[in-house]
Image (cartoon, rainbow, N blue to C red; front, side, top):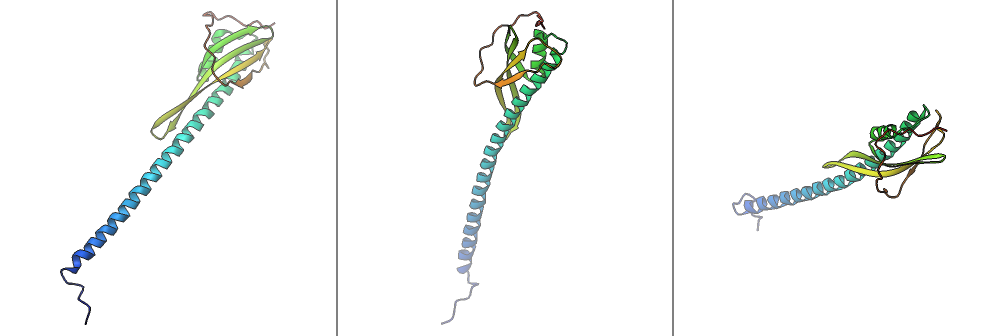
Length: 164
């Protein structure tokens, strides 16, 4: 007995079907791999976006402290100067308390970062303790707060903080 010739009409459809099945299997594997890679990348991108936004918030908080120091160099720190420092740092003034020996300010600072499908943001609150009297070298001590306190009304006037 001899082997049947491979060019018989009945043999070709089986070969073609096996190639088609193999190609479909490879296509499915590629699709599954691509979907896994894509969704894994989205998760990593979202994590990095959150981390970048949080880093932006903390950078804004440090920037606000620097702005407070610059504004206090003349010996006064008005509500308007506090609001300006907050605005320049992507922040919002929540509380201002003037006490003997210290000015306390609470800011809510927000930052945005890009993510996989758009952007992500972070908001944190920071407390600033500014010692009195105000001098050119006055530096604010910054503390990240665990939660944001409710906003308290601040006077509409630009009340100076006494330097003495």
